[in-house]
Image (cartoon, rainbow, N blue to C red):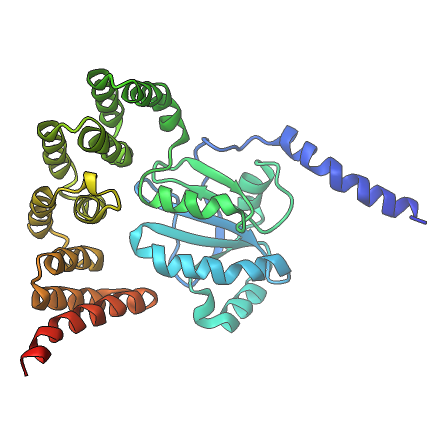
Length: 344
């Protein structure tokens, strides 16, 4: 039989979410508050600034679920730190306790850690958002607005971070574009391609980088459904110009044009044009750029060039990514050696 105290605790577990929701003053879409940190560990002091994405996690050394999240956060720090994500762990424990714990983790907890100053950060973030339990994290986009509030193990967070770092997580912008994008797709389904192109262009015009996937969608419609070679070529030329300084999007474009599973979408002539633009860009120290160019060289049966480019990509890659780059390098090498071996 439950005691009155046990019943009260059980009841509180169901009431808490309601209380949190009703008392929340900080929500998704709001500008992120400032950080009030007394002691910084693993790096210098930072503040939330434009042009950078942040994942601010509230945790404590004694918290079991918090400890379980550390390896995942550390992996994201290593893989996405260079792409614009700063991870900050904020704790209310004493500096001595936090430092001791972080030092004991070594390279397994290499992201920024801050000790809250008189619980001011917790009040401005956790309490303001109506959150009482840890771990709890806040994803902040490069416009300083909060994009996500919740548990670091939430399945939605990884995708949100990936989109935020790529500048493609903006619920307000998505909502603004939704009616026009739906109109474009409806027109395409009815084969009213003139209206579809007009609507697609309007969506892309809102933010070409954010809506790069929509630009790809428009091209697919023109090439595979409308079967309009002139229009599809025009769209690719436009995309090459728009994304010339964005190697990640340009790489995706090249892969679509050269190796898309839907062969009706492919266009090797335009893929080569995009590769030329990529070669002329300032991204030749980027492993993904080099790997994409290696892929194109391989398709053109220049196996030696493919090996050279892939070797450079492998050498520049992050340690966690090296096995995948090495596997492709070995494959290119095997193909490059095969003809030589057959001549002996």
